[in-house]
Image 1: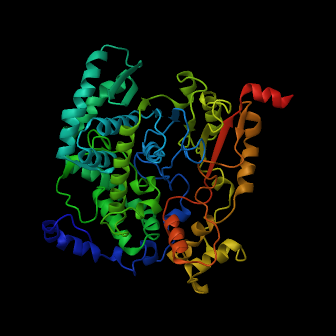
Image 2: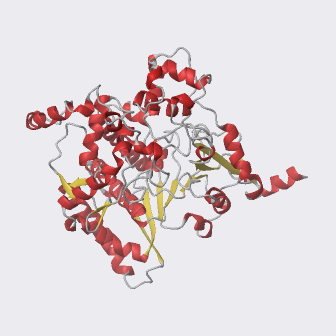
Image 3: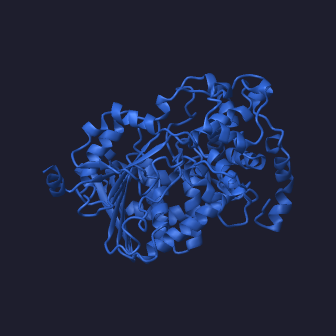
Length: 547
């Protein structure tokens, strides 16, 4: 246990001692369905009932952020030109931050990042975070405020004061100049400081709601906000789903996770929480409605292995403390990097399928379309049709790429089996997983729903090959026939692996490999998710090739 001070340790030791001794943090803990001898609810519920509980808004992504550029591996770290990147439907800044902090030190040209999201409240939060990053002089103050505005259910009075005294006047000045304009018209404002610029293009009605959003800090009652969030994340109908996630965690990580569920603060476990009394205006709506659901978790939005390896006082069991340290270092690197070279942010509130009407064609080196997933049939094709025109062709930049993410294409075409007895007992994946687990369930428990049985299918999913199934999906959806002429799928991805989360067999099974496997297992990912990378042929080159 790491405390923020001696005084904090003395004051809070009784509470933390009780938490650390709770059943959920003990080796003998079992999910409620095991204690009651029944089948867990998530096994027999239909897909609709199995969905998250609460507001169906993705306040944070469910897949780890990644660098969409990978400059050194593609154009090269000495690339002599400016770069123009588009994040087509991800108002969350995770991929933006990852991309900026991974820029090589050798590259010092102009970077333009266009961030779009049709959800007004998501894009507004990103605007606020960037204004804090650029205009707050005290970097440490800026970083802590950004972390809590982004991820904590409650913020400090000092964070609220910063929003009211620095950010709100900037917004008020814009609103005063556009208050009589058409509510549906797009209105732009650019703020510049040094070599950094932030251009924001929002509908007039969104601009006019921004001051009211910031005023929520004074209007939402903390006790009602606290109750609203708890009613969502601790909903009694979702007990088995919570236990299903908890069973994947080591005992002490379960304790840390329970504390986050109870309080919603992204802090090291032993940190003083007395100051966090102001409901986060970007995670609550009036009168006091929590805007997340019980499936969102800030830990899911970042690579777990990197988070747990982050330096700092927090132990590996304190995963939220580790994430705080990771974000602190990452946001410092982000602020340092945008101070170093000319950086231009453009934030838009536009339907992503209409971006080709408002952005110049053939102008982007990368397009991140990973938030437009195949959960809605037809979206991937529609995204290719509307976004590929604004990507540079391979003559302008041989490495220009659009990235897509397929979350359900493979899953929807596979039989569902949660029982160990229904798995192929001779499969290489099952044999390998048994070696990793080391202890095989006894034959008497083969058909039970105990955790030691339920962990097998998701572990096997991390190894199974799904190429053929995904190829069938592409064929059934007629991708080759429906994509624009000149749109070419990369045979080998150069930015993010096609099956990013898939693990490879390894012998012998050393401690480092086992640690990697278990960390991947604890992420909300599996080996069935697919990333595709697309490029655009130059028209002249295409004609020559056809001849």
